[in-house]
Image (cartoon, rainbow, N blue to C red):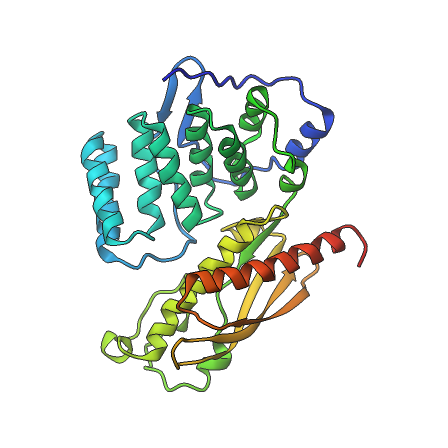
Length: 338
């Protein structure tokens, strides 16, 4: 494929340069995994970045397969790595890291369209993972999919990657999106663990049960025999689904950006559930709060009512509406109208 992207800094309108400078604070420890140069084509560095601070996988088989694939990538056994990652995805299609690693492998094989698609799936499952967004943007550049390249470059920048030169290079190839000025200034939000303390306080749990296992960052310590068939165990899976859906809903907003590092956030979004129904379908009630980190105060509070925790479309539809209301309120607040 003919590569036409050029990354020399062009002359830009002052406003665009200003927005890029305002947003160009790179995260510490970030590294370039997929590099594009106009003379030598595209390549991947084989060492992946750390992937901590993200939702836990649901399948041990997918984890093992992905770990094996990472070793195969290091050994440049790309076809074997790809086949191993396909098995990981067969075991758990929602294990985001398998899609991420698959996108890396396909990029190494110069199969850019497939690489873009795999990386977009990774960003869908785990929005705010800067390297996934960066690689998706570069893969899109290689097939001249400029809309996706812009979208993912902006998301990578907001997630903590220094995309200044990439954004400037994209400007040479195509005009920025109409909402660029809004998106590059999006408010960074970290979604905290779901708080179930009000509910758990009234339950008789095994002494070694860790309630943070239901929030996306903890390690399950409860005995499978105690929890495997219980309503609480099912609720734990539902809460993981709820937290992931909230992150995805925030990622769809033009004025909000999901970050995985609370140190990069302007706001923390904290969900507290006050009731989970164990009848079918499971439902949940509670509220979420938006906490302004600098001001150290709750600036927004919204009741939530999810009628079916087992239905991803129901959860997504509800949360989109909540996030739309939040974004409208935040725009008014930032405009000084509240």
